[in-house]
Image 1 (tube, rainbow, N blue to C red):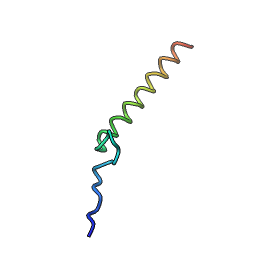
Image 2 (image 1 turned 180 degrees about the vertical axis):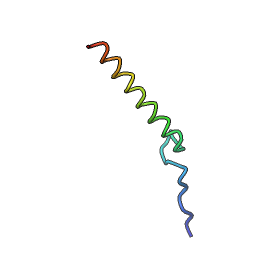
Image 3 (image 1 turned 30 degrees about the horizontal axis):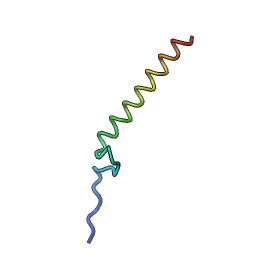
Length: 44
């Protein structure tokens, strides 16, 4: 009988845990906010 898949593994090559996935997504979102804020100040 097969074992159920481990929900803690993502299957992604560089991001093996969901905690890392969340941190990467949070970092990308923060970078976009910083970039949009800087561009808004630069061009307004």
